[in-house]
Image (tube, rainbow, N blue to C red; front, side):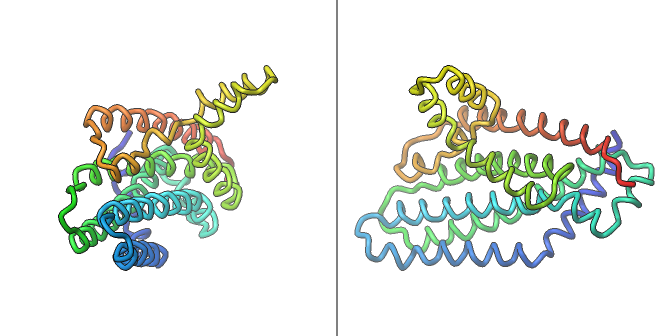
Length: 260
């Protein structure tokens, strides 16, 4: 696979996405939410760092996922709408290269925005901190796991964008994100069911769907529960493995799509 072509497509995608007004709006909104927690903690005696950390990480996670979904679902649709996809597929660029470059460019955009959100959170914490325990290491670890989640969710959105409309792609992607955070509950209720078919179905969902709750350590950070780097490593590898499988499936579908 020609990496030069992939890098060129990724760079152009990043340059185009980073200038999109929606990204500026998301950053300003997240900054507003995090900074507003400063006023809220004034009413919460002894909970300065805890409340601000919880609000900040929650904001980064939610808007990072929404950004991943809405950038990912427009991947193919935007190219078709602009008629540029017909020019691209007629050139000596493999569709898998085009898809990989687009994905990397979108992911880089999300990482940059998530990094800016993290800086806003850290600046806010530095402002509201009193004599409480420093949670910065845990915040950084939680942020790294969020990036793994954004990586996976973006891949899911890109996968659906290769064969579905933006509205349906958004619904499917958000649905998988929700299910991914509720897998343990789904399996629990499936085991309690009297129906064998329901138990089998919930087991299949549990083992097939990516368990995104593994990447959610916000409560541990908030309550200063240590997170080992080994946990960060293997859960990130878990997310990367799912991401690669989804992207391979997306490339397979995209390579066989007829744009005529």
